[in-house]
Image 1 (cartoon, rainbow, N blue to C red):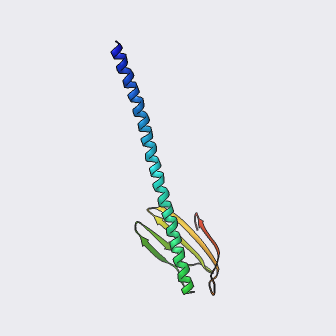
Image 2 (image 1 turned 180 degrees about the horizontal axis):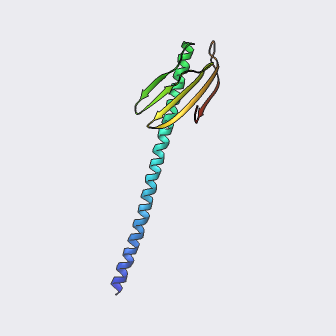
Image 3 (image 1 turned 60 degrees about the horizontal axis):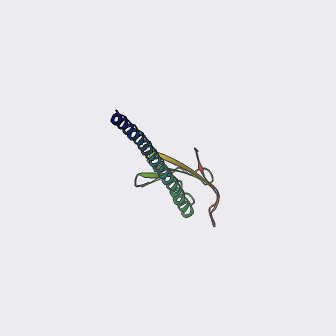
Length: 124
C-alpha cells in the first residue's frame, strides 16, 4: 500500500511539473510572437520614413515632383502617394501586412526646406 501511495504522489508531482512547464512554454511562444510583430511594425515605420525622406529629396531637386512611387526592400515596401495641394506628402510602409502611414506637410521648399509637420497617422 505504501508503494502505491508513493507512486501516486510521484505521478501527481510530475503532472504538476509538466503543467507548469507547459505554461512557461506557451508564455514564451506568446512573447516571441509579440516581439516578432513589434519588429515588423517597427520595420513598417522605418519603411514609411524611407519613402518620406526619398520624396523630400525628390521634391527638393524638382519642385514639380508628383510622388506615386514604390520602393521594394526585402519582404516589405513603401509607397509615396501623389503629392497633394501645396506639398503634402503621404507615405505608406508595409512589412508583411504591418502598415504604417506618414503625413508630412511642407511650408517652403526653396531655398531652404521647412517642414511644418511630420507625423504618423492612422489613416489619411
